[in-house]
Length: 375
Length: 242
Ligand code: SF4
Image 1 (tube, protein in one colour):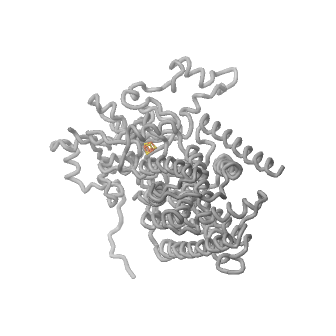
Image 2 (image 1 turned 60 degrees about the vertical axis):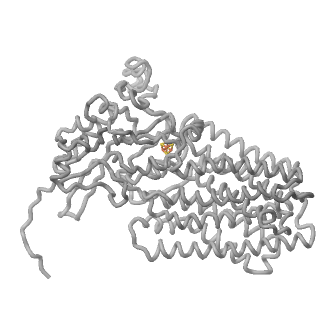
Image 3 (image 1 turned 180 degrees about the vertical axis):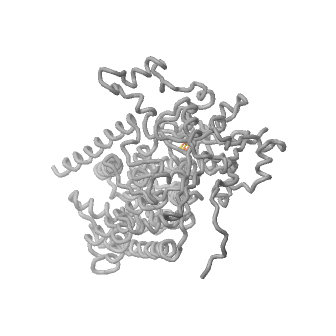
């Protein structure tokens, strides 16, 4: 009964998403809170959130196979499947962000190798294909080290190239490309760890098969939580330096947008909910070893990081320049429309449904019986 | 091969906006879209205030960030230096808008010419609806004042989901005509020509005056130059005081 209700809820999310898609493609993007100033908004932020989380999951899934730390093997199958589900959510949001998705054919026919966006599109295409192949090998108990290594390398490339994409343009000095190419993969890893903890522990409990089932498994999750805490800590340090350098000590006009965003809800959510709170939770040993502590910290981090992806995009845009600044305030504000929220929920519902089906039919707890290193 | 550029004489420019209106007509621009626009600024506090007006358009940068970033080469350079857009190849990612340091690229958020698609008469029982007018005047395509010449090199009216921007009226330049904003400027404040031609008037202007370009420090090498500045105000010479 509970399962049916869950599937029903997810189907409703997908249905609402499909209706939104139909409305967006028939009427245009007037349904989004977009202008020529705010050209990228929540649908793209959702895409960045999902795709970075997927890269982070790839980092986690590479631990047992690429780096040979065998005790992480029980996490492998679930993590790779999650990667696929999360990536599909990213694709959903990307399609909802684009105006003429059918023209993507020109990415192949008329490629521009100087464009970060072209590289990202290509890499994500290859990423999905390699991921599917990798999962299939795991499913048939023939784990391929080559495919897993490829997934790991592509995940590094995509998460750093996203930093290149947002941070490259000289037109947006508030975005620092060198910072983003470090910050994005780092936070991707944090999101990956959070997703693994959340889905392994919370989802399993909700579906009536609580994890961990053995002392070894409990130790493994405690270890993941420790790594999780360390990664959040490093992220927090970077985040604070970004705030000090760009927001407090610099008086550069172009960084005005960042100083403004520091007061925004998305920035504060990212800092307090997404970094400080989970870090504190993971710092306290008695909380860290509990399931609820791990689940809560993971959930908070993911919510905070979603807000963070939006904050990064808005930082680049809220200060209009040139002729765009005619007749508008020095800073523009942004409030997502219902359609934009539905796009993010559409992505989430697709991901959760895929994951639910995976849990139900693919035995994601299963460990590989046979491992063919280097095949 | 010519390399086209424009010089805008700020002393001659009276800020009438004729360039922007001419551009809208020539290029079939939809509501809210301006390929030719302006940056205005009011400085000082009353009674010592002054208003500055600077016409703007795509700078047709030699090293154009929009071209570098476009994943499908929809935004590209022509041999004559014009930064051109191919509507068919555009996937609507808006990365060119994100990359452009001048904010001169617009996106078609919805189907163009919303007003002309309206089937409500402006005055009930008195006037036809905009849609009826379009049907009668132009076989139901675009607007009653649609310029078919624009379609020679670009979609005559750009569909929803793609970007658009100034093309230096490449369709006119191809025929040996000046961009329409240059033609329409009543003050001859816009001078258009070939930078490769050593005897061309724009070479003279660029040599004679200390021209500047927008955000030169970015290294985009814009091809729209500004010269002089209009300020007839006089003041009593003084050394100030403490
Ligand atoms: S919106 Fe169109 S022209 Fe602009 S970068 Fe994307 S594909 Fe190129």
